Image (cartoon, rainbow, N blue to C red):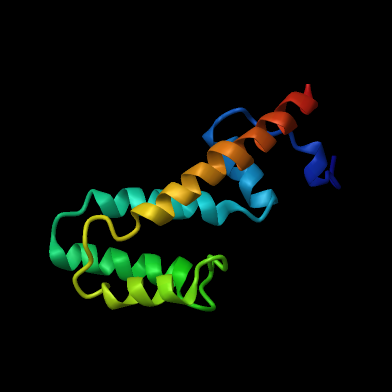
Length: 119
């Protein structure tokens, strides 16, 4: 159809379908944060890690960020900001766990329900 709505597009039961579902629900930031923190955890160089930490802070944590995590307290934001010059390995571990749990317990079950309703 030339005028197909997003409702006419079936979600696939795969990572791309889950990402599309998250984008449709304005929740893609949760998946992107999780992925960026996974990438951050693999870095060993101090400069590399500092650059990745700054990217994560700018993209998700600082007030007005593109994918701002509005549920963070001012103290958490301040604590992370103060560690950006020499970020520890586990700087974003808690945030990643929150994102993972949100996907596991809220977003994926909603995605699965939508997949089942398509049949």
